Image (cartoon, rainbow, N blue to C red; front, side):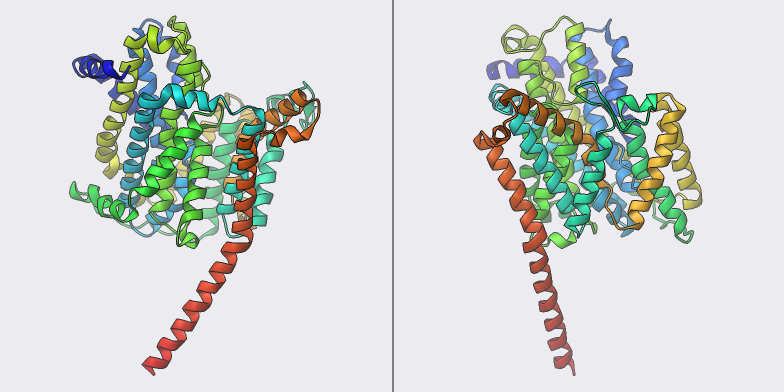
Length: 512
């Protein structure tokens, strides 16, 4: 297959129509991703009927461009207004918005753009080089292994989201409890209170909007009204202010985060949110200054954005090699392939090489387009920082209400968003992080489904959950991570605080 790659590159580069389709897809994806409540999955699903009459390659490239742009676009609103465009951008919000408050919007946006492109290119290269091999590895993850992976993700985010591990775990449990609402796998309604709309569970998009958009508006209402920092229009050269900071971060962190994202993407059902959460947790764990995460450091942007964009390449691997979508977006793209008469699977690479190779090349090209487009739009994104808060936050509240309604086309979704927003605001007042709540909601069904499936296979024997070395390794990692953040890291922080206090006292004595 690699021998045919130069020909595929030449074919793609010589067809202006294919290039235009990719550019259009990326532009649509960035726009959709930047609007809270709109997702790449929704955009592709709405465009699916219009692709029926298109050539197969153009249709798939259009959806791929939307996928790429949608993952990146959510980082802009996460940084500028502390509202993630998608769950995958939640971890970027923590340090990105803090960097904005320090007067560095162009730096935060530049780092997010560079990390997104780097992670996407790494995922694309892995897709081209190791698609069959990584797909075979992903098949090693059966119900016990996926259960253990979800446990690791839940513990990791609960540990790194705030200072208190106990509060992080409580917030995670709240999210898991919300995820149990609806009809369970046996067809029994749970916690629905005979409300018909709850039979399908709490809708995810209104929940995300309530957790972060409405809760942020309510939090700002408590603060004295202040005008935002006035920033000058970002010149062309200031767009590249992230370059020296990227050099300081180094290449180890983005490479490691990208590999985490690609592997997570290759696991069916894991998705970009889990990739970003795990990469952020690993970056904090391995950092010499973990206490600075959440205060606006570059590593807190580079790690999650590298991972969630590398996930896009990883998600294509099981979809193309075995017809198993890696996330919700590739599930819709899989449907488009089937509609076009293309059946993904092991024979796809030999029987439809004229489609697969240009698709992979187009995927890489989409990230090159994203680099140019992201840098060109960076000044416009940064201007959000100068909008008067008295105008900005009522606008966010209005968009939140409309987006919640559009997502489900029901007044119930609007009401659910308001209730969730008020609850999230109260949790913030009690110093709880909202990120573990979201992760619990997203991963709760995956956790329960694989737990019940594993017990069903074993006839109720719980030892099946530790029957493979992969599951044991993941569960041990989760336990060690919890021990580290609950015991070792607080002791290290107290020791460093005593050392700083001692050095400060000795400095005062010398000055005297």
